[in-house]
Image (cartoon, rainbow, N blue to C red; front, side, top):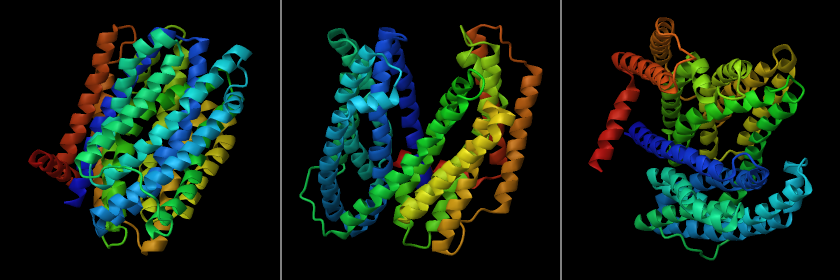
Length: 512
């Protein structure tokens, strides 16, 4: 029953994330229609980057990692106790995030200079002005992250997964009016409107479930609150290290041939789709479950089930994307100034990046296991190892392999980080999660069948780069459907438990 619950939560998050990504694309289209590729939009993007980075580090990342495990265990003491803890945490968060917001507003000129030292004076002044308006987004989204943690801990995942979609929808609806009235500043107001929609949609759903988030005077002697606050800074420090990886690629890429940084960025854009749909969805869904199981014998079985399910969906996605990387990159990007070299270079970078997706899935789930066990030092060490490994391999591979080396380095680093995290978990639990050899063999057979089918498809029906966009889209869809169908048929015939989990999860959803 527990694996089915985890699968149901993950599937709900995938649906919500998919809708959010589609609306995110529509949001970019609306922005492009008003500002194209202009200096004003550059200033807005720099301003939004600062606020968004703070959101990722302080609000959604470290807050979720510190809050969910403690709150999930507190739920065992009864809902009133858990509600009181959430309200105390809300008060602490309001004070802390207001302080950071005010600091960010005061430091806006310095932030603009650090992120965009090449801006001329008018553009830098505009970016600073927009940064000051956008920093309150951190305050709003911090409250939204706390509401998400409460809902996830209570087994509600669909509305939190939809919340970013509500945010994008609010932006799309408000931007035409606000931009027409305030110019580029209207984009900042639309971001704030989206942040409010992100928070309020979850607040209303929490109230419907019996948890009305309102401030309550914090009891600093409360051990659960103190534990939560003690975990936050180590997790924030660890998550901040993750932001160094793209910086490493950009810094080292500047020493390589022209266009190296661009092709790495294009490959990263593509990899974000399976990363968000599958890896983040599974890891986010399993955190409350791991937290509840941390004090029991079923922690390792829950972690093993999460790892197997993550690989069950990530491995075929990785294989399929690697096989059709060239046609997929051509369909998305090849037009205008994006020529043959950029196509082939982005394809190579994408294939090498895809190699790291399974390792990324495993390391992300393992990190959630460390969070659930309240092991902040070990989580920090695992992240530090990943960053150090990325830096060392990038330096070693960049000159013999060029941009390919910079694409391969993080793939290897993430693949090695997962086992390191498992070693830390083994120290505390005395054993590893179950990973049967039979499952590995069956997975290899299913992936071999899928890979063979896709290779034969490409050989029998070569991708025509000169065909219309509709025909090229149909070719890519055909490849995806063929690969998915063969993998599904193979895993069904080999009787993978994951299909039973999916069937049970869907049946439970219908029953509800």
